[in-house]
Image (tube, rainbow, N blue to C red; front, top):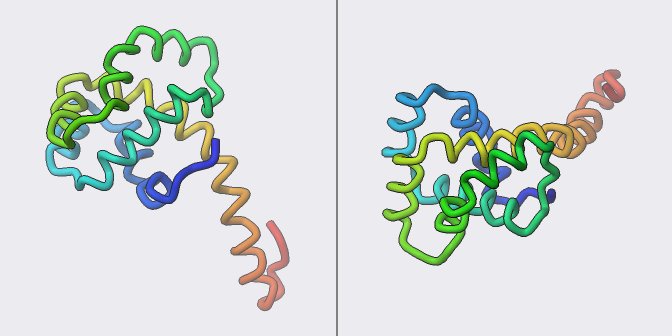
Length: 127
């Protein structure tokens, strides 16, 4: 999956949401910015379009929440999407779990050359 700019911008927040307990996740989603909600919608759209590689366990979890994922990715207001995410707490795990595992190697591949070139001037070389 090629992460969108919005997903890359909010990757740490998405990673935190994927691992957070239900109470923390609910509190964070109730105060989340519109851009963060749209980043979660981008993940749902990528999942629907088949851009994310899923294990069989992740695929079965996504199939169980198929209607909610489709509602999240459909046209509609941010308020309805925020309410859906708050009410369906397990939806976050089905969406963001594969994202975090799938993007870690991709983002490492993007960041590592930048850090390597920065450290190259200091004798650090590549990692």
